[in-house]
Image (spheres, rainbow over the protein chains, first blue to last red):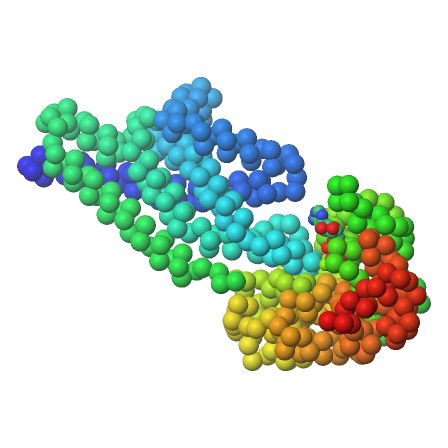
Length: 222
Length: 251
Ligand SMILES: Nc1ncnc2c1ncn2[C@@H]1O[C@H](COP(=O)(O)OP(=O)(O)O)[C@@H](O)[C@H]1O
Ligand SMILES: [Mg+2]
């Protein structure tokens, strides 16, 4: 217990890093996932193929490898840097890798949502003269989103927990890193461990409850 | 509504053929619809009536032959195709109202997004159209809260909101409970007498007799016969039509 109190400020700072990564990733992965699914249902074969290849490659690669690629491949080899400050640079590399990874799950969730939208909706949209993108944006995706709010919540929960893999991209003192670092000094401390689990649950549980509530509220009645 | 070019047909199909895989669903279809004309298409299920409707606004492509609308060949894709579709209304058997939009939004979406009309103006016009089909009091509701007959009347208002040159109806009353059929047919008869050009797939003989200029009998992907409504129902020329009529008349 004393360990938890003594190291609480460091752990809290680490946890804040996880929260920040999660917030930015949530936004980017939702946007990117929407773009991906638009590719996958596009009438243009090249875009469809690009979307399919991207999803199948990235979704089936372990996250640690995606992040390592983002750090080593993009950063060290190609020289992609977001900032001279190592921790800021690390932050954005993690955000990039985790968003790219999470977007594939967002895209697949949305695709199953699109499958719940009756074909007649798209036909009616085309019949009044909406273009493909307009039908997608105004008719199909809004209904698809509503159908998969709860699964998207699960994707977000997984993403929040995945922020603890951040140190695979290096230079970033997230809570899992701080915990391991602390254990090096103190030995394994059960209170620290439980404290961190509770901190994550304090974030993920509300996400689950909120998206569950939202999905009932937004459900499209047919 | 006689405009320039008023004598040329609004829609003309010439030697149109269409397959689904090995199934030959449209066989050498020749059909013209004049401006202001109401054509009823009738025939057994699977005969290609829906496909005929759908090729006219290019929801389905054709394999050979030609279709012109308002003197122009149907555009293949892109903005031109979207424009064509906005000029050809379509009313489906299953209504297909946008489930996540209110009744008023269903009617104003096209004018706002396709035509670029200001929201306020579109809403005013939308309410007028809903009034015309007798649904104005339901404007704020969602489609699922309306009866089938009401939904179909909204679908007609949605088509009208685009100021189409023509409306295609694909069995607009087949999915309705019997007591709701008449309210939809009444709206359609009103449109016909206002001079709207209509292609209507339906088995409602009452409607055909009251509103149609011509009846086209279609079976196995072919137009088997074309006649004036009264003549078709009392003295069908082909055996297929006689056989078909005896079936729908006895039931
Ligand atoms: N998208 C499609 N794919 C394959 N076959 C189809 C498709 N649409 C219709 N068909 C077939 O084409 C034939 C004609 O269909 P349709 O035009 O719907 O006839 P109708 O409206 O007169 O009942 C039917 O045999 C039907 O099964
Ligand atoms: Mg049909």
